[in-house]
Image: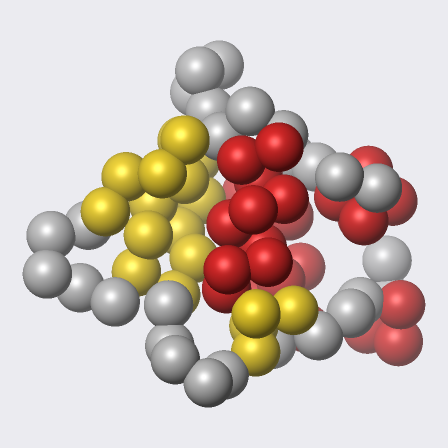
Length: 76
């Protein structure tokens, strides 16, 4: 997975794809982050910063935490 192949996505797009992969959304108190939890125990955190895309490095980390391949994620 190289940086050139990672798309620039908003937090809402990332959360939507994670939901289609079976994750549920858990708000982390009064923060600007959302914890995504899968029934099998996988979890990751997505920052919700209005008007900003998720950086490619952070998207790579989210996919690693969620244990989802880039190709699978893009097909969701």
